[in-house]
Image (spheres, helix red, strand yellow):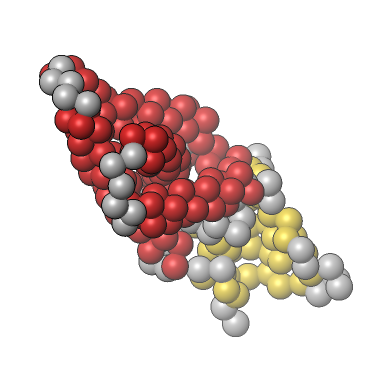
Length: 196
């Protein structure tokens, strides 16, 4: 996913996840029997987990709609899946140790974290599937839009506009770029770069 072209809210969500993940990781090294600290860790981990769950839903829809290119953005997506797995495991462990600390042995309470992890992912996946699957994936970008021809996209950049075929939010296939200076290039593109 070309993160520079997607909606700024997705970048804000990335920042929130990284901040919460880092704070949670740092706080987990504090050895304390504080119930308040434990509860804060559980809440911040869950918020990060839900955020990563939402982001992973977007990445999966993107994968099937716009196709991935092997690049830095793919590495970020794979990293987010790894963070999701780590956070899910941490959340379940924190939840269990919190209720063990309180000497509560209700079996439903120990199943609740798994439900709390799966439900946001399923809900966000369904929502994003309905909103962005297929050609609608370009709604994620405030810079690109669909045209009447389903293969052709129109994108505005800071230094010009592009009209043509795209793959994973990158210029790929036949297209025309018109720079703000008036210079144009019409022809073949591959992975965001023009072929000469």
